Image (tube, rainbow, N blue to C red; front, side, top):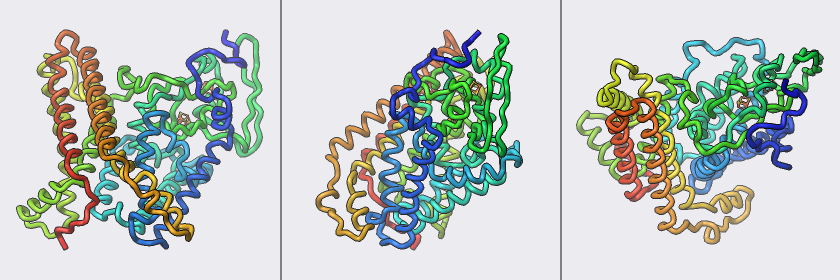
Length: 490
Ligand code: SF4
Ligand code: SF4
């Protein structure tokens, strides 16, 4: 039988790396990171409410819309979902969660990604309509709204409903952390099979100290302590030995800290391994469409920055006699972010199934679910190309903005320079082309797995869709990007 005290086999655990691993496993490790980001969030809110209402000179806008997003895509790719790990919005959430420990679960009908899709749509619509990127005040209000929403939902429901079902930022992180080289896992599954309390999901927190003596088989017993110093179990209800994907994992490491056998860890894996492993994702419509919609939203978000968007909005306004910018934007993004991705996904799924002669054997849902992971690398490439542009166009401007926030003269000449535009274009081309070929490879594998000898015809509709998305994004990226300022409806 497995030794319950000395588990030392399995994949490489990042949490065994000296210093970093020790810090992350420390029960206050996450709190330290959250407090640091909470302090930063507080500075953004203060500057947003009281500082200069010039987006380029205010911490709220520069940090939220330039530096945070630029760093986010890099960190997701090279490390994993570290921003959810250190998320300051989860701080009031943790306090609220202790209040709701005997509360209700989130309503069953809402335990899916439809709310998250709605949240993403709303956030990007508000971003365009209210020009959030240009308003420090409104950006500060968005941050405050985030804190309030996460606290209220956590106080009402037992699980981390805000993180799992609502948060647009979390949804983005979940989807694109599926590319990352780390994932929660266990070192020895045999130990989990004999574990009595399953603390990784149930937690080791108790209002009063409790000592439980577990029978771990083979005539052995193990003392397990629960108490007020214990850790809450997995907020998103993942069970460490069964985790196959980073979807829904906030990388909070509560499972690691709660495990009495020191058996859970943050394991290294090949980049994006789960995307080519069947069964890693739930084959649900909401999950599949979230991934495709997110990729299309990346395209429309970039499209909102180039001149043709004005021509299109003007055409919409004239053709439909619109007097409201909100309605025109709702139509534009309703079509681009919801209607088009859903319609094209259904069409590609239907055509793929028909061309492969699998109509009687596979449902449309199964086909779409099999190809949905292929939209992750391309979608990530689209977002990366866009966010890298904003970040590299002003990589060090955070320094003079900080200087001015603290009452010093901002050294704009010294730190305001943009990176070489050739370098920026090269980064955009590499990530976009790299994402496309990775996506194509995933789609090809899915087609071969699903349709066997008829894989090539079954692949064609998906390959065409991916190619079309890549070319459209390429066209958008080749246009001059600008911070918007034209108001057609003034
Ligand atoms: S990872 Fe979970 S199930 Fe496995 S030993 Fe630890 S607490 Fe038990
Ligand atoms: S407790 Fe859940 S959300 Fe947190 S790291 Fe473990 S599996 Fe991920």
